[in-house]
Image 1 (spheres, one colour):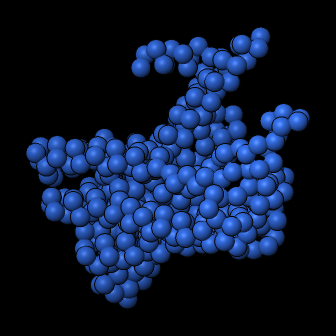
Image 2: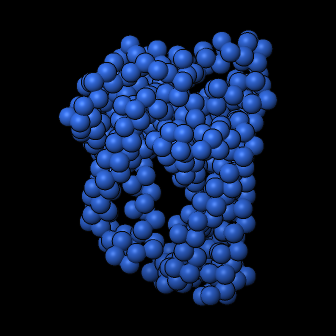
Image 3: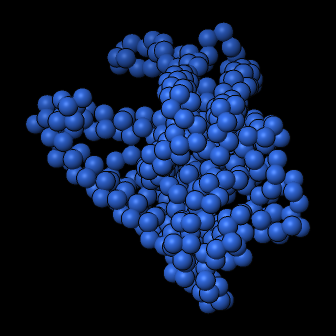
Length: 431
């Protein structure tokens, strides 16, 4: 391990990128600790203690922001608006002809899509910030806490708080893009990784205090097993063999060249889980905004992560969004045409519509397996923690969705570091 770190930091370009990334991550964590203007920081801390970290369906969003959401800090929105905007733009890229045309234009079209994502991020951040500030001003953000977190909730104060929160979300988006361009890893994913990792000691201590040493050790072992399983499934692929008849090996020799089309078991990644969490978040948010008019069902079984209704709804939404992403994210007919244009074919399958049908069949089986995997990963921590009597700590970062995000980001960042090391070796050889 020390040898690997020494190799990494002896490469000037890679060392510069890593230090730049660490500096921006530190700036993001600093912004998450700065409270909004007009917020009573002592009252917020007391309310957090009284309500056991807030609870409810939006506990995951608090986890994604590194605890900044319920701290009412400058970066309270975290990276959630940008992730949501990117998912929407990506989905439109397969449904709207204009967006699909931009996707096919290469770097210029991708730059235009990124610009649309930035605009949509701000558009999503405005209502989210307004809802959070309105709940905090009305005292409904923390269910059983009666302390005023905003002592003087005037119209000007609320407007300034919303403006600062939206600006913080835009600044966090800019930091993420800087990491992607000049640092290491995908910027927004790295910031999300650090936000979740930041909560590990806090959530672990809360679990230890409420459950005892034996339960804590058992749940840690369970979390490690989940991480191992996530690594195994995320690396799993179905490789469809493809042969190309027009591969030129020599100016006078033509022969078949073998390749393969990789299809991951989990094609959708973490997107179905985020979408499902968003859908479950909206009823709880609306019920808190409406107060008693929201109904006890929205604030009770549906918002309680350990209830059977919440678990069933969560799993059903994850499965639905897995199939939705499979329909919009991968086009078997277009991929079959692309293989045919390059002179390729799948052994034992006729080119054209038959190849598209075969790809659709394989994708359907993989989607079923991936949907079951994601649904189990999303609800299993709630079931285990509920059975262990720790229903108040459903957002433990060692299991479920958090493990999926952290493992995915870690694997992607490690591959980028390895790529830089390989490039440095080849450049050194050429020199």
